[in-house]
Image (cartoon, rainbow, N blue to C red):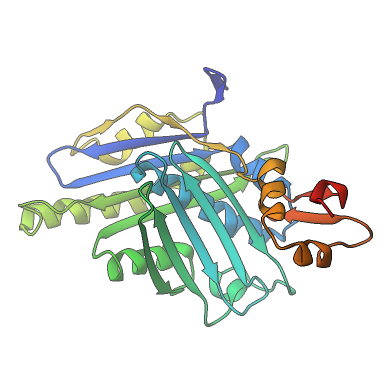
Length: 290
């Protein structure tokens, strides 16, 4: 289904719950996550985890202003030593995973190892950078995210994530996040009760509902929060595009010392591989002024 040339289910929908301090976002990804994962031949568990990370990057992109970038990075000593997803202002996402060993198990700790950590970095358009790091706790990325926001940001948040494939084998993913905003009444029993209720209802959300593009997001939110009342705002598109370019790579190579450019020559050419889009750019000695 298309709307204005954009796949309808590659969208982020913000919402608020009436008479509470709770707001949230729902994300559904179709062609975007499928394009990213199809560029690589990852094991199933790796694709599922990266799809979840991409959903979270899309959710967090709604907080970006102007030309900011939010990056989620998991690192460890396991068979997947690194996994990255990022999003720029406007909801453009990308991601990749580094695979170095045999994948056994599906949890983040099984994939990334016992000493893994999650880092979330915000690069603001004014050149400012903010980063929080937390150990990769629990058995899911949701556990790690809850720990990050609780320990690094002192925020009450809750996530629900889902991934899957359709009958044709195309990847799809979805997620919802709610957060309790700090207000003058946020410490009141009424506010705390509204937050507890919002969390409980979020956990009733089924993976099938998050991934069902025939189920309108407003209908989904109404099912969850009709007793309190919920308002969904206009949906925003989520797309994917790698930020590498042949011109940018060429300029970077020319900025290197000549000795380094000569050292990079292999079989009469310099080849630069982008892990995000899994493509390579090749340059001859003449193109590199050698």
